[in-house]
Image (cartoon, rainbow, N blue to C red; front, side, top):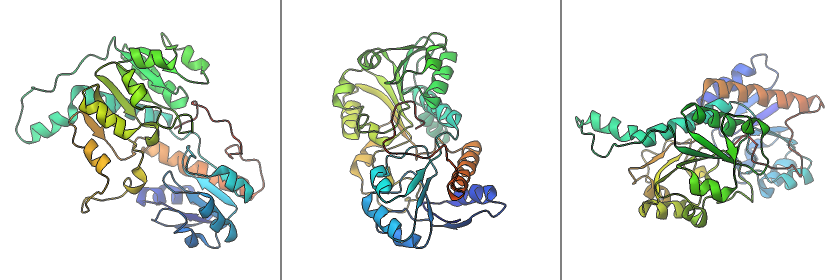
Length: 341
């Protein structure tokens, strides 16, 4: 099948070409993001392959459908950037990669916690400048602390296991409880207000839905412990960034680790080092010494990229051969916090 692959980098091409070594598909790579302004580039392609920041709204899908596209292959688990009802109306099949490397994201979340707690980012910069002072680098033992996990699917479950191994008290919140979470040593489910009030560290591992949009907002922030540490490796819009900044300024939030940002589509995966970033909210985040922001790299491991490439091409083959595809997204699909973020 002829496939237009959007939002590609060198590593995307490397792993997709390796998975396509037998030449089953004609892969045509585009650096640009897919949206209503770039959709004409996919003219004549029966399949379009996209990533997290491509915009598949009704207008874009209209153009794709008119041009002959009938398959939309996502190289990711989340599909909040796709108008599924519009796709169904235009008879465009949508498939995704629901599970590529839960370990990579869970481990990265733990890495952010360790770096924030022990101020590793600040210590690294100090030592490079010949400053070996320990002032301002005081951390705390994770052992015995309470860690809250919002979303206990594949990623959240692995994260919880790791934090239990540190000796943490793990509490979870999920609209759809996972029996495997409840089977962990001392992990237990609680209501969201109790999690917010009791946790020293809170990590988000849930998808973005209308119900979870700005789940972390001024109200929920006020319910948290003073000095709480927050980590988000899921979806940027789970957090109200303006409210977060206010909580950081008041010292109510003690530290913040973000691998995602609600307006990241205009920033992440690009080299903007020679440009003036126009997003003042994002720039304000970067001024805090107790904030670490990375560019959506939690998924970025060899194992994850290999699995993404293999599953994406397998999905395309299934649809091309009119076989049932287990990763097809149907409307309406029941969304829950067990879905991989």
